Length: 127
Picture (cartoon, one colour):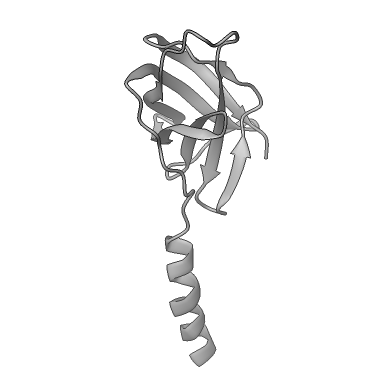
């Protein structure tokens, strides 16, 4: 019994404090982004978090919301207009799964378009 109680006091706080560790960087420009979030053929779960990254820098952190059985995110991807860029910046999306403290990467990237509204995307993540 003592081992069980010790296990609860040691493991439970570690489980509850597990986080993705992403810290969003703010810029003066942005793009609105919303998407359905899928892991394989299933919806992501409430408590999961999606991050948007450009060149490894976190530009968005959005909690997954489950509405009518559909997992969605809606947020702002921060960025700046850079006239010197020859190629548009690509957004890599990552999903932090709360239940097992793992991070998955989306199968496709999205092009950053300052000032636009990017809606109706489906972000697919492989297990």
